[in-house]
Image (cartoon, rainbow, N blue to C red; front, side):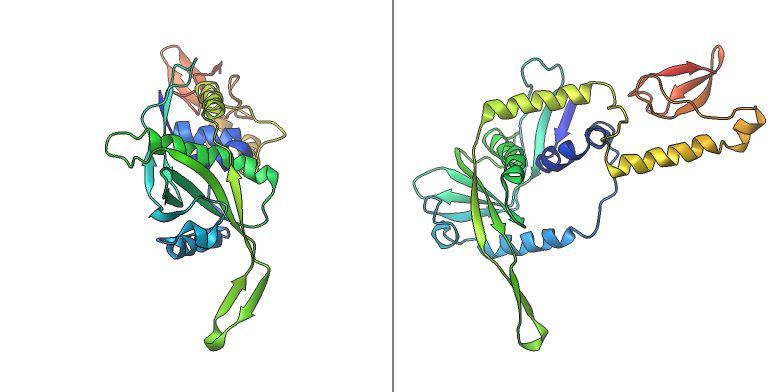
Length: 274
């Protein structure tokens, strides 16, 4: 199997809930989005437009001299097969900005709003390393930039606001450059971990699942506690869970009569006798 991996999903979704990650990547089932954080996307979009064409010396003296040449471009890598994996993957997503450096090479930069810390920066390492791999190893027709010599985050931390004439308001705060180390070997080991997860059984429901999974389980519990009329007419009192992945099951009729089949079939082939 060949999996499409988004750099942002490798950062947030993978760490927040392995079950939701598998459902999205393998089964195309995406959990609902939360509308409130969209303001951060607006801020990032404004930053991309502002920094386009600017010299790195103006906003990040820690970087070698260069100019921002690319903003919010799509990347798509060649097929990647980490060592020891039967399945393959490819990276597909969009970076924020890339600067072309005067003495050669490119810097991939990502905008963030908030207070930077080591834990967050370590998490974003996956995202930026994914962009670097995809840009240096693109699929035919995709954007190719090489070598990617610098990776990093530009954090904006709002600290004050100022009311301007005609009802305009300005948010003010410092920007901080956080360099990210590139490590292709470590990233490929991580991809192997990801593919092994995707090739394996559906992650089991446990106490550390995310709020969305907890909500879906509550719905399942209600369905089990209140069977539909068809089930009641047959004297059934509950819908069993799959012995392999713990999902709810569906009653089906086969060659030898009725049986319970996992609702994730054909991804999961768990069955129970009726």
